[in-house]
Length: 343
Image (cartoon, rainbow, N blue to C red):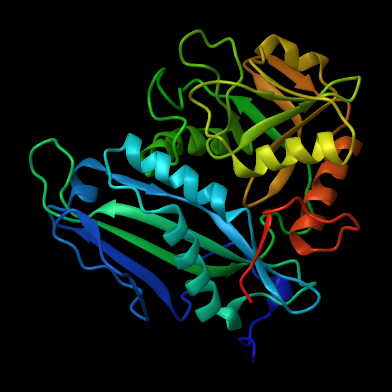
């Protein structure tokens, strides 16, 4: 197979149109068989439910090329299950888990020439998504939906290596109590855009959102979960009913316990505890885990002992171990079901 003629080692994290994508439509109470298409455009009514009432959910995962030339994805079953749950919460017909995985396989296989070569540091980003496609003018769920998957080759989320970032405690709320913060829906990310732009304008890389009810507990950023490291090497991640259950975060917690022998705990994390942690990171599909060097809230500044120059030692081990599993370079075998081979 001839790879596309791209400067693989210098790709940015952006969208490029690839050859094929998958489309399936829900109509008259059932999903059709689905098809691969070369058409990258979507033709919908001006009154489609996605445009009027934002009925939409999505996922994000990656495909990797291993040293032996095989192409794999990482825990796609968890993405499929999460999207199933997101759809239910948005009153959308869930796309079956097995068909989700098959659709991803089809699109990656059809675009194998776009999968970045092993050793370049780049990956194939996969975006499954579903939206309301039929007309809706009254406030109610649509009757028809479309499920799609496209892929695009991307470089590392942080060019030039991962450096600790500065974040601010946002004055805005990301999600309402008993709202939709725990699902992966576009509306949640739209809510975070103004806060993100405000943070960037003030010289910060990201936001830290606190719980909207009391503004006492740490929740997440606009698109990533938090991990903290205690002085004793314990890994702590915040628990809240409005935090998105990150596949990467769950995988890192497993790696910490079963590969690195560290104690892990998921619990509510008070903001006033931050000064007692020695490392902090934000984790997600795009960056895996990015270290945080400082947190600012008004006039208060918290500097983590790991500093602003490089990853802390525990965060580095977590990053290296998980990426080693994803790329097939780690000595220990991946847990059963984590690596899904496509080619």
